[in-house]
Length: 310
Ligand code: PYC
Image 1 (cartoon, rainbow, N blue to C red):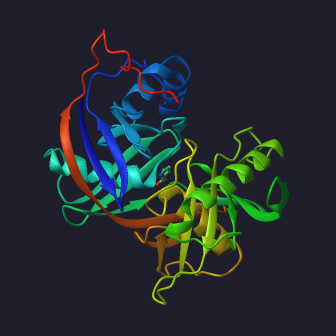
Image 2: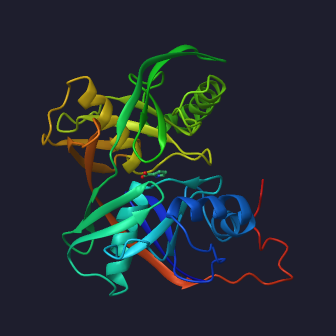
């Protein structure tokens, strides 16, 4: 299996070029469902240690249905197949450029959540125009074991988020273990309360928002991903959900730009335009760098060829 590894603000993406199971035809959402349900051992083996690393997201290249798209992609972490992934899309764009498959400029990419576009301005810098994002519920209150009452917004940005602002714990690198533990408890309570969309997709990411130490930065976030790791980047789909909340509250005008940073200080430049269905169309600009290119080997006699499922 040939792969290219990159990182976006420290958050790793592994683009899978070949060697994946046949997912058949149909929409990307249908193929993502088949990947999620029928090929668990495949996607876990790519991301779990020893071949993968904590936080890593896989980006499986597939044929797009729409001929105007340069690629189709299905993202997953070590615990779940994702609807979309912002940091992964920035990493994918830089990877496709590294491989000589795309040049600078605008390209369309099909994902299970819908079609997104990428603008590659140099070998590392990418703007993603994401799927329409929206706030679903403002001020949903939860009783969380060990924390107490927490109030947050439920919002969609290609994945489902519960966003707590302000964070119950300062968003600082020294607090990552405590933030992770608290966010896992909040996510359990959010899912137990059935928070998500009408179709039954439950919240699978939690965001804690905080102020930045840098006055030029609008805010800093901590994002818990489905695999219980934190996003080293400010999370593209999470930033989209956050923009939808800022827009709904009248706290950010269309076209106005803000900088948001992750808990480790990686920045995204963010803005939005009104969407056609009452939501917003987010723009996320960030940088990614290719780190490695290689072949994954899964020897039959390797007891850990399916990864370490701790
Ligand atoms: O950047 O959208 C994102 C993302 C989702 C999960 C990890 N990163």
